Image 1 (cartoon, one colour):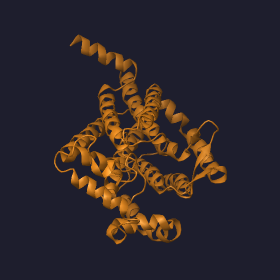
Image 2 (spheres, rainbow, N blue to C red; image 1 turned 180 degrees about the horizontal axis):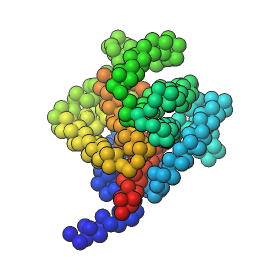
Image 3 (spheres, helix red, strand yellow; image 1 turned 135 degrees about the vertical axis):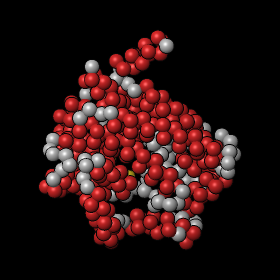
Image 4 (tube, rainbow, N blue to C red; image 1 turned 60 degrees about the vertical axis):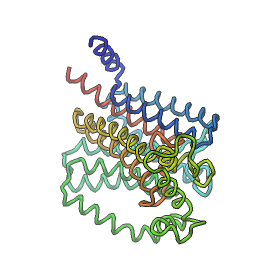
Amino acid sequence: MASQTSQQGLFFRLHIDFSLLMGLIILVIIGQIILYSASGENMALMQRQGIRLGIAFIVMFTLAQISPDSLCRWSPVIFIIGIVMLIAVLLVGTKVLGAQRWLNLGLFRFQPSEMMKLAVPMMLAWFLAGNNIPPTKKYLFLAIVLLLIPVLLIAKQPDLGTSLLVSSAGLFVIFMSGISWKIIFSFIIAGITFTIPMWFFLMRDYQRQRVLTMLDPESDPLGSGYHIIQSKIAIGSGGGFGKGWLNGTQSHLEFLPERHTDFIFSVFAEEFGFSGILILLMIYLWIILRGIYITTQAHGTFSRLLGSSIILTFLTYIFVNIGMVSGILPVVGVPLPLVSYGGTSIVTIMAGFGILMSIHTHRKLLAH
């Protein structure tokens, strides 16, 4: 008992939440196991992912040391820097496969839209926390304007998936600020109405095709519907207990595209089956419930609003990825968090959990 108390004291001094950290480590280990299979046992890719995960954990530990008050003060500066970088992307950004999303910084390429997944909710939490809660119509309108600026800049790149995640992160802050259900339903109606001009004027042809493919993938089984059809075959063929690790035929015979990134859940479902899916979802649930607990115990309006957005955005990642590989949502390029191969998105997610840990441990310091 004394040893356990001492261990908890050590994590407290390091501003680390032990329960949340264990959930993240277990999830990352599972992610590495399935990535090894999905990548065709590619050790070079595994090493790159390991380096990125190492950087992500360092970022998480670093942000955990920064108090929420300091994050609040720096939120407007971070937001403005992000907006400037998004404008720079549209002017001088690097174009890859028709999308202009990156800034070439010499040694590496940086995707500013990823940092906006945190910069936007931080800015909105700072803005709304500094005024009356719930916000008046004036401040609510200004908050929406602050949200639309980065979302439209990201959509222009084009990057539909990231723009949806950034808009979700900002809307979560606004919804959690205590606005009435009448206003929330007005947002929903406005969003549905906005889909009409968005379909005709904002979405590219390939983005519209993704929506049509979701509705009827069999209409073009060898073209636009191929990804979804193969993904559903992989998920269904896993059955109750799966085909076993490294034995997935859809992935190893290369029927399943993007198997180590967006469609890695399909590989997992094929190899570990429904029972494996339940275990994976339980780990995600563990992390989400811990995040919700931290948020409910947060000290100050800024911390509560930002914490709510971080954990709800994490839930959105999971829902959108599993939904799109299952054929119930359009394919928008959203990775399965901490499981899919990637770089910037992993760092962004872990940065968010670092902020959650800061919110929790600094609250305890204030309590003492």
